[in-house]
Amino acid sequence: MLSIVKLGHPALRARAEPVVATDESLARLAEDMLETMYAHDGCGLAANQVGVTRRIVVIDTREAKKRPSVLRIGGKTRPVHKHMPMILVNPEIESAGMCLAGSEACLSIPGIHGEVTRPAVVKARAHDLEGNVVEFEAEGLLARALQHEVDHLNGVLFIDRLDAAERQRVADELHQMAGGMLG
Image (tube, rainbow, N blue to C red; front, side):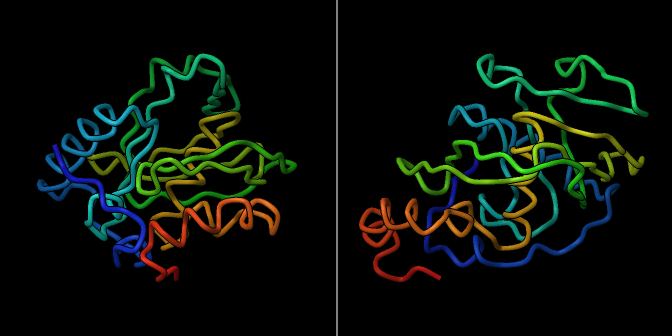
């Protein structure tokens, strides 16, 4: 299991580097990331969160029964559980729907949660560990998790997306957590 880096660690603000999907070290990293995510009851984890600035994320929304996910491949709805966990290399997403507010939290910012407005539907393109192109559309928690994790790969944290009132609500806790060095 890997250690999750916390707010203030430079990897969380770094833009992750693209990787070659068939790089053998990625399979081990992905395995370790999944183990770490599950151990911390997360539904997504970006490599930045374990101090590795490489463009890979793992996602598994199966356990979030109260926050359903929708997955469409080739325009057809597919059973989400059959495609989990997802290991996405060099993921790219684009908005495909209206925006909705929803609660978010982060394993790298424990104890903090807030309402973040994001597109309700996204189109995703990535590679799997064999180098195959993976394209799908996501809605619900899967869409939110994808956006949250891709943000991590770009050095963006969910707290950066809080509106002014939400940011003010958690400002003292964030200041203490980051040792006064929010970036």
